Image (cartoon, rainbow over all chains, first blue to last red; front, side):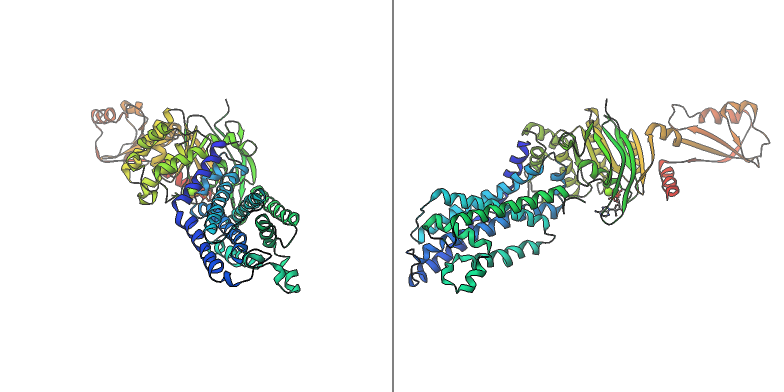
Length: 253
Length: 308
Ligand SMILES: Nc1ncnc2c1ncn2[C@@H]1O[C@H](COP(=O)(O)OP(=O)(O)OP(=O)(O)O)[C@@H](O)[C@H]1O
Ligand SMILES: [Mg+2]
């Protein structure tokens, strides 16, 4: 194990976040806070409680998930896309590092940033709405699992992308809609039966549901199913990454 | 002892179907400076990129000090430092950060004293806290060299290190390269400049259209090429070479108007002074003279032509 290399990549990526503090931490926290202000304090007070939870509090897990997904993807995809774009990737490819080490460095750093962000948003939410976390360990598990999985997904995206627009399109056109439609702002019981069924095909629903359960013990799907879907998605990403490295896809000619 | 680098039947066909390397065989010894000469598109960068792990070979094998570049890539790559042809740098990083990053990436514990030494040797010390994007092209090139040296490699690849570098800096780089070689580092450099190969290399390889068409000790090459001819246009034609001048192995032109003397520029004495005084003693007068030399450049051009 090239321990120094993992540490070097990890610290390098963390330093990049620090340098771009505003973009990577401050702005997601600020924009999520706006949701709390609008939906929690302003409109939320006029919306009925959902299964005994005030609307403002109800949307917190979904909004944290939204940030986790988009930021994990943005961070990890940019982290690997940028060296590909500038050409500095030559150094990574010529270094005595294994694929596992590269992954640990890049994905580890991206996931760490997301986890920190998750906590910051959680703390901010606490300022606006009454929070309660019923199952802290489950909450942490979903937080970490989601951050790691979607950082991995972002890493894959960064390798696949051959232009900056592709980097932005996926989070914007796929992840954000899936999150909004995955029950960030509502329980799927509120939907007509047909749309309930459609929503069940949205993988993000399972993440939000499990995460929300760890807060308020209310869930759209069974906790085990949520966990299963999360783990399955992680495995799928791992397989994709394994294939990328094995074939050198878009990395080596 | 294993060669520093051993290349066996190496071929590369790019995804486009282009055959960039055709069964290359080449051994590079420890501690030598090897210059790889070749025109644009000959395959120099491809060859280097394969050895360093950036491009996957289609066929054949490469070992670095006995370590296969694929099955034993860790050991092989840890020995190698690469200065790429393109100026690819992390614009937003400082010189110090990017050089330290390289060291860590290659699995070395941090060693600020060593990095300091490298930066000083490349006259980058006063730039260490500057962002790379604020540096000039020549300085960026030096940053790339510093990155390659940061992990104390035993083998250094320099892919056109002096492209776009002014004469003064070029000389400075040559000095750096020489002092590296003195510490035992094996150096492989590619260049378009014959003078660079002449100046630096112990051995020269010429590559064209993906094939190595010549590998020769530079001294040997220079001995072959280092011959100069002195042609003397005579006042009066001679019908034969005077006996007194037989020691000089002169040639007489067909019409007897020209005497040709071939000498070795590399030797201590060229014998020209002796020849001239012996000529006047023998009463041979000449009205004009000129010298010609076949340079490495000539040979290079004719080699590449004939390979085409
Ligand atoms: N990724 C690639 N896909 C297809 N062809 C390529 C690729 N990279 C290089 N080539 C081709 O392979 C040949 C050798 O290229 P290479 O870069 O090795 O040449 P070179 O000797 O380094 O040239 P130069 O002196 O210009 O740097 C060229 O004809 C080039 O067009
Ligand atoms: Mg080249």
